[in-house]
Image 1: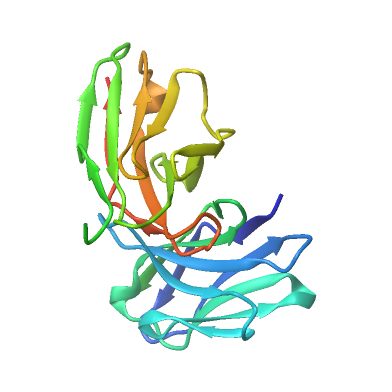
Image 2: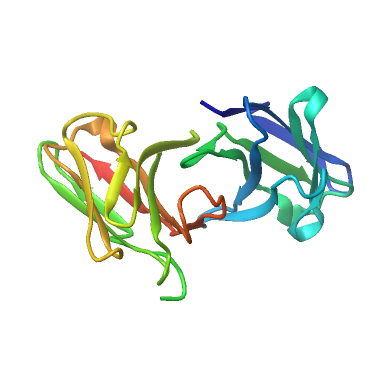
Length: 110
Length: 114
């Protein structure tokens, strides 16, 4: 079965700094990969998705992710963190149902 | 409806009682999913429906858990004889079809078993 692994359960950055959240996938076929975000006391929402059309995927709020087959990675980045980016981020792979990673909590320091 | 609706938003129950959690998916979405999120943890898959059928029940933790869906719409997750370890947020999501990837989540039902 396909799966994703998120490296780092907690990432802390300063406001204005680069955000890098790591995700590696395991799949025997080209995967459909996703990042979801969960803001405090809110439901999950889709941040971006990769469906093989382009390796660099742009999402909402300035986030983007690059699919790298050679590294089996789909890391999420944002050039400059904002306080409002503080949230839980989940990488996911779509099989018959969505399989989620364990999540990475992003803290943004002023 | 406009989004996925779950009820109740909060439920406190005593150990051993049965609970029912309800999910109203987005109109026209044929796939519906249930996940569990324990405090500080990721999403644990429970079950999904394509139409009214549940092709994969492998995530249900025990036979105390069951779910059904009728009319390709509302789904109910039932937990019988609740235990303290059942305390979690139960999330429902829907998508146009199973496997298309874009899930729309409700805000969850927070279950506390005393």
